[in-house]
Length: 268
Image (cartoon, rainbow, N blue to C red; front, top):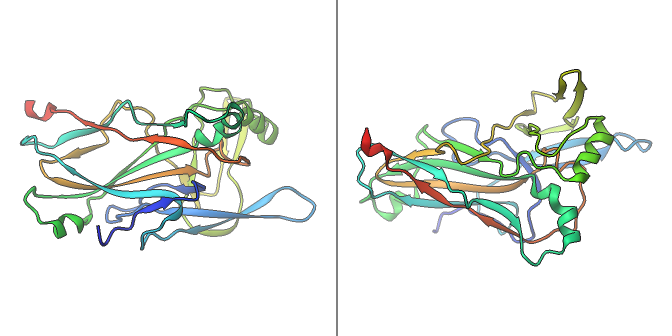
């Protein structure tokens, strides 16, 4: 539509970081890009420099994907229905991807995130301009879905052991601390082994725990009998430990997002 600010990644997805929105009147995720510089010529240790990416205009070569959708709910329920992600929601390699590419790209695939931002709703009989211009009105909500939250490639496990001396195992959830503020000469978050497992060392001024859902069990939003505007994000989470210090040639992936709603509200 004429005033859209959709972002497409025609040159491919590149690592960025997001913790969603930080207040209920924000109609776009805060997405940060990062660059790096060595601390000195005699070390491999690096600083991180982060900056907030703009979504004020539409873009075709963004490092992430973002687009608006409009859900028309006409069940006539007197209460809001529950909206879920369906089992088919996934990210997978294309069928023709070579096994060698899959092996080198697996850790990047495990770092993919889906973000869902519910902006607001208007009556079913609203005109097009009103529908397209739906605002938060201090009621925006968001969810981040992490489809491969506990999957780790052999390369990731070996890299974590070498860098942090921690014995990560496939199937173990490792939290992500996403970027929340632009900054210079930032230290990377670190895994510190402890007697009971590990702790994450991070700078709370610039990073915060990325709260994600990892299953389809609970509803993500409630949607009324109305037209609801949502914004969807897809990105490689650069602060996921699976994607740190990785190199790959890239590969085609299939992204599938399915929604389903229940009618339990009729029983209320």
